[in-house]
Length: 119
Image (cartoon, rainbow, N blue to C red; front, side):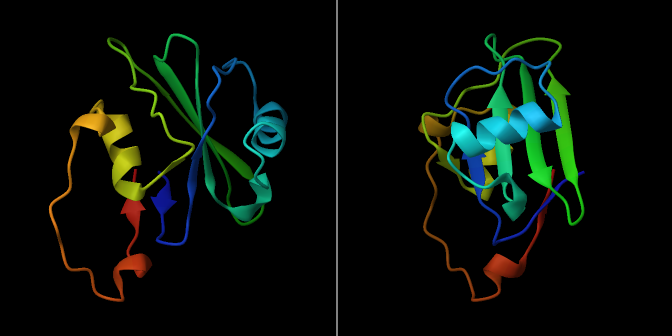
């Protein structure tokens, strides 16, 4: 389980990724392709060519961790964005298209960033 805090950013690799890559390969892509430091604790999403597999790389206090999901049927919608919000990553994981979703106006107190989302 990944806990997504309000301070975490979620980056998406725009190119298809070989799912055989592990910690070193994915952290290299985060650094050189996404152009972000993989040691920050932010999340880095990688999709395979057929978009039925997804890996999330993150640095968890004292080492890298990978969360991996493979769909038995269907595909993930690859977002057209380089960075996702917390709500958008949940939509991607649930198979919803971000482009077709609109958000109603809401009031968020100053404590909103401190809440965690668990995936």
